[in-house]
Length: 360
Ligand code: PMP
View (cartoon, protein in one colour):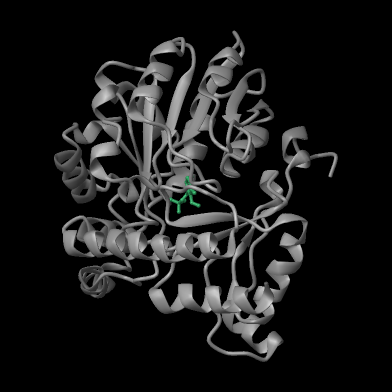
């Protein structure tokens, strides 16, 4: 234990759930509904399935280390150069690559209270100092975050929308914040849930790259594109930053199947639209339930809703589990009175609502 770097020793292990089939066996129930990991309830797009089948014949070979087709297509969609893109084995990988590229043990890394777990993880793994800034209304306090920047700050992480709260910053507020951040600080804008945000509200974050050389935007295929199990994410930045990130990145960090799947799903606009429509309808369903039961919830722009159940949240989580519905406790995010419920298909949301009504 003493041999591990001090930052690693401080890390808490990631709390992974049991495989569903194992849980079903243990609890003696079948048809468990999992609303715990902000996954896409639609399952894989048919175009992705076809692309994966086509890819099987090439799997004895190494993946394309540069992700040529995926980057070309992304660059076209985002109106950037392919040389501005860095691919990751999920966006978690991108976040880690960013921290390893820029942050040393002597630096501070700023994020918000209730921020995504990977920010403190990658910070501490390096032995850098995490600075968690208290939230306002469960969301980012951008003024306080700007005020927390010191000479030692090297990176700021902002998730918009944020997980696990679903809180959302307006384009105007975000832009004003990035404009205030000094150049020795890299701003990582994590837009994992971007596609769920109505287009008119979305920040033109990729467009801001020309204005802010210290900005990096990270996105994922795990949510609205439905590829969580395949692991595909990316960063968009200046060419100079992308060059650095690509130096540290493992050459085959995205495997052939994830490259093929991500490239294919970008052409499946119907799937994307359906993902968003199912999410909007499911969100309405969960909100209606909360209003009816007079439960407080944190208004969310993601594919999940974080609901306040009070001090009995832990118990409710267990009871829901025994009724075959898995949600996510968020006590580890300093939200001990809340549970995060991912939006599922209508019958899955109904299963949660029915189980809750039995409990309340
Ligand atoms: N950022 C945020 C805010 C997230 O909630 C998640 C997924 N839980 C990720 C990044 C990482 O997703 P992935 O590694 O699957 O791309």
